[in-house]
Amino acid sequence: MSTTEGNRAMTADKAASTPRPILEVDHIHHVYQTGQTAYTAIDDLSFVVNEGELVSIVGPSGAGKTTMLRILSGLLAPTSGSVSLQGERVTGVPDGMAMVFQDYSRSLLPWQSIRKNVLFPLNDRVGSKSERRDIAQQSLEAVGLSGHEDKYPWQLSGGMQQRVAIARALAYRPRLMLMDEPFASVDAQTRSDLEDLVLLLRAEFGMTILFVTHDIDESVYLANRVLVLSRPPATLVEDIVVDLPMPRDQIATKEDPKFVHIRGHVARLIRGVDQ
Image 1 (cartoon, rainbow, N blue to C red):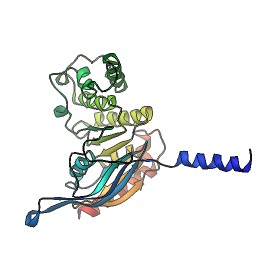
Image 2 (image 1 turned 90 degrees about the horizontal axis):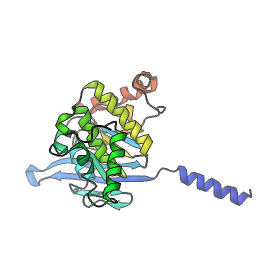
Image 3 (image 1 turned 120 degrees about the vertical axis):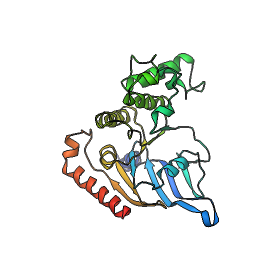
Image 4 (image 1 turned 90 degrees about the vertical axis):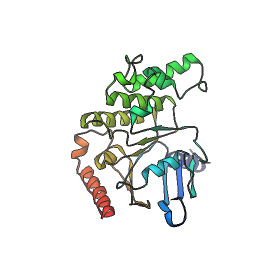
């Protein structure tokens, strides 16, 4: 290989390994109401989520995470600043973004079967009826719900209902999945199982995920990076790289001295913010 060809190959390799932003949050600021009743929820918040990353966000209660998610999902326009998804400014609910909510019981349609709940966001925009049914089936199999397709949400446990919500988001094949404290309402063992499911799906489908949680252990266990928010008005306190080996394991990972150190650092930041 010539020197020129070698330089081109090195440039191509470097470009391939350079993180590609999928979500860019640029100096967003949000104020509710005006005058004496004005309340600033977010103040100059900026961060980037790169393609294929799982980034978790933690912060004290009332830190503006709900306002932030509404802005990211296009449901609320920021007072100033901007949000871009793959280079396109978000001005409404964007295609290519899916949300998994904390309250799975309200996000599912109780009068529809599990299969129809998963099919719901696809409508007529994705292939033929047969192709949509195949996508729904693949998504249900991916979250371990094969055989439950004809049941209704109220016939399933809380953990299984949240799996349906994840399958529905997965069926949409989003470029970015937002997860808003999705496991806060389930027991500890189910929570661990669902955390591992998210990691498995991310690896299998190459998903990019922004995961909001109050649980410090969960934020570190799942993520490539942890973003710590301040008390309102919310700003970014620190962007922490989680340099832990993959795949993660509920016991081995949480016994790793690196995990213990990062978890302690995040906890100290949040305690400092709370005081």
